[in-house]
Picture 1 (cartoon, rainbow, N blue to C red):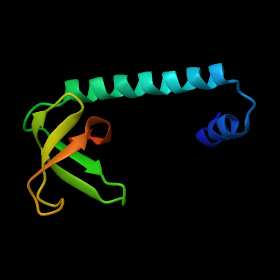
Picture 2 (cartoon, one colour):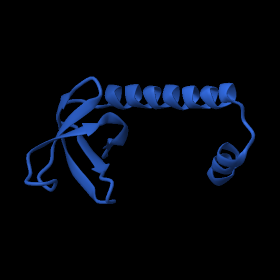
Picture 3 (cartoon, rainbow, N blue to C red):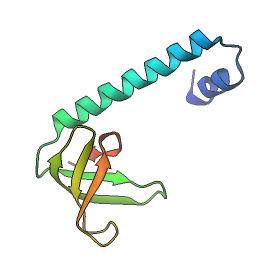
Length: 94
C-alpha cells in the first residue's frame, strides 16, 4: 500500500469517528517519537538543514535545542542570524 492509497482510503473511506481519532492519535505519536529521535541526535554545533514552505533548503548550525524548536544559525534565511525551526523540519547533514 503506497501513500496515495492510504490518503485516498482516509479521505473517501467510511471510517467512523473513533477510527479516525485512532488514526490521528497514531500520527501524533509517531511525530512525537520522530522529534525525540531528532533532538537526541543533535548537539550544539551540528550541521543541519531545513526546507521552508516555499521549497527552499537552508543550511546552518545548531545554537540551542529547545523543547519543540531548534535555534539554527543560518546566514541564508531572511537577513541572516538565528532562526527558530520546528524540530520535525530539521535534518542533520553529514
